[in-house]
Amino acid sequence: MSSTIYLVLIAVAVVFGIGAVLVNRSRSAKVKPAAPAPSRPAPTKPAKPAPAPAAVVTPPPATDAEAEPELEPEPEPEPEIERASFRTRMSKARGALTGAFLGIRSRGGITNETWDDLEEALLRADVGVRVTDELLEGLKGRVKSKEIADPDALLAALQAEMRSRLEGTDRGLTFEPGAPGSPNVWLFVGVNGVGKTTTIGKLANQQIADGRTVLMAAGDTFRAAAAEQLTTWAERSGAEIVRGNEGGDPSAVIFDAIERASARNIDLVLADTAGRLHTKTNLMDELRKVRRVAAKGDGRVTEVLLVIDATTGQNGLTQAREFGDATEVTGVVLTKLDGSAKGGIVFAIETELGLPVKLVGLGETIHDMVPFDPADFIDALFQES
Ligand SMILES: Nc1nc2c(ncn2[C@@H]2O[C@H](COP(=O)(O)OP(=O)(O)OP(=O)(O)O)[C@@H](O)[C@H]2O)c(=O)[nH]1
Ligand SMILES: [Mg+2]
Image (tube, rainbow, N blue to C red):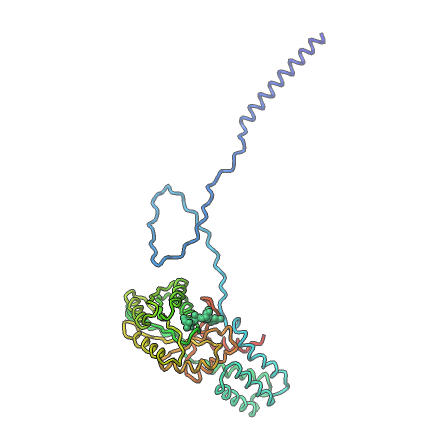
């Protein structure tokens, strides 16, 4: 009997076991194995846009409706550009004046030492003897008449007087819109290494940003490296360039460049010239010829910009006279004001030469140039911290 029960129990167990296996099998057949994550085609990283070639050929739009839509390239973040400003860049020139101001303010009143300190500070900052004398004479009169009674009022009056001397001058770069094929020509002259070529690069960038088309003329044929340097600036700024042969006639290169600009309806030619000492007669004669020839073709010379390095001080005035005689200079670009303690040269240039300072270089990169703004300049010069 008991063996019968055992047999029955074993039979039941076998039946259940088989049933369980079958049920499990059928279940596992329904649960699909976890599908691997749909393998998306790896997004093709958009290639960095190549620098735009001079002539861009735009391909026709794709017509294949089946074509996979192109992934939009992520916009590249705009690089942070630190714009040059007098305030941030003129620390040296500021130091030349404000160091003296501390001493002047610390005295209870206006004494003989006050006038000595002021005179020394203005001369050190390269304001020049003539302008310094005029400024101090005017202030002395106002102290005598009791209009000015204390050091703070004296310095405020000096600041206002210096600003008013620079205000009211037309500093715009002359651009005469004319018939197509008649480009404006801006010629750059000055002694060696003052920043002519760099200024052309910076200015081309600004003019192109303002919507003008620009062609550079590599009129410095003295060294092959000069044309190379200008070519780099042309690429950076998006300007065209006409180059000549090393040792060639700079007048011919500039003339050709103007003809090319005229043929292509380009608005503006920026013409570089080799640096030269204002005392070298033959080189100054060469520059006279450049100036003459530039006006002969289809272009109009609307600016002759003398580039002066602010760190060279009063010698810049002598240069200005000689270059002015040779080329009818229309304005001054004062470079390297960021590294100079002699910002006062602006007063000497404007008062003694009657030439407007139009542009100021405040560093070496393409963005480091600003139009000369007297109010900003004077504020920066007097800012004491
Ligand atoms: N700190 C500073 N450096 C400048 C400025 N402008 C030009 N430079 C530098 O001055 C040096 C000479 O500049 P260039 O533009 O080659 O001068 P250039 O007058 O064309 O020189 P030449 O063709 O040899 O007569 C370069 O190292 C420039 O980077 C400026 O405003 N500030
Ligand atoms: Mg140069």
